[in-house]
Amino acid sequence: MSYQTVALVPLLLIPILCCSAGPSEAAKPQEMALSTQAFADEAFIPDKYAYQGIGQNLSIPFEWTSPPQGTKSLALLIVDLHPIAKNWIHWMVVDLPPSRRDLPEGISGTREMPGEEKRNSFGEKGYGGPMPPPGSGPHLYQTTLFALSVPTLSLKDKPSYQEFLAAVHGKVLAQSSWKGAFQRTQ
Image (cartoon, rainbow, N blue to C red; front, side, top):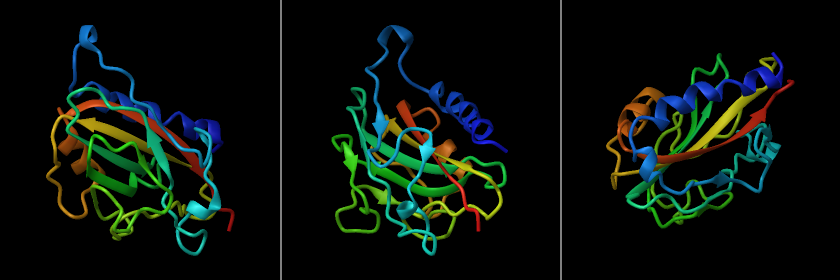
């Protein structure tokens, strides 16, 4: 499978969430934009952000512009969109303060971490970097920042991807995504 084929997958995810709630077109809020200096959008993720044994498992640094007015909290989700990964969650942070504009490199698991880190699909609290099976080709990792109309999300310690989607349904004021690819050859 080529990288270009994998890159088409996120188009299926975004429409599910963007229309779940929010203002009408007439009252559309300013755009909220997620980004990272670590790699270009849709480029390969540097090895240091990969899971233990492959990389240093440092959480990727992200920054974003102001969320729309009325935002009561933010949530950040990194998910592996490759078909064999079945929406593997690499990082889920909920209840981020709406005044927050970044998550620095390596902040996961530290006392400085704002919000609440949930258990990822590895079963660990916080960030778990890319670790696709060798020979499975490039995997596309989508990070999405959600501006929410509620101050807190009620989720268990290790929510599934579907449970996260259900929790944010009807509460998304805006969202922005950044994608990166990662591939293991051995």
